[in-house]
Image (cartoon, rainbow, N blue to C red):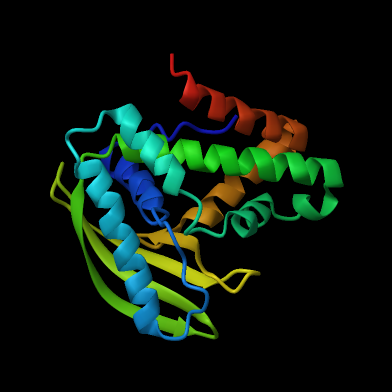
Length: 211
């Protein structure tokens, strides 16, 4: 079964960080320089923090706003295929379509709900690295809850449409997509791909109808 992230505050903050990077309304068409990657991450971070800092909004309103802007900054189809690993190559066309549909819904709703509960914080971009058309934007983030610094790296590339998108987040040397890939592989190995797809759909419904 897909985990519910039953971790402590620090891991909850990590989940919120992953959501933060997706708050984008418009992506640039080409990544031509590290400065552009810097502006990309800096812009979406400030927009996301503005939403969660708005005390006039309820949690539900924040989540609604976040859901509307989630997905534009992350290469979700690529991430979905990566997290499924070799099972993607073995899946039928129908399974692939259903999986990508439910994965995108799960990803957006799941992280939007986590982020809507986040109390806020601050960030500072500390460096940018370029490697063969990919960019790694390094950032230090500080939670207002525990005032602890967390080191985060946002990995970006150009998607099939030549738009700059985030494809991984590395939090204190732990890759989010690699972690999720291992989790999904365990579910598929024990229960099968159809079960994983059903679980993704179930988790999306849970977000919409919390108990």
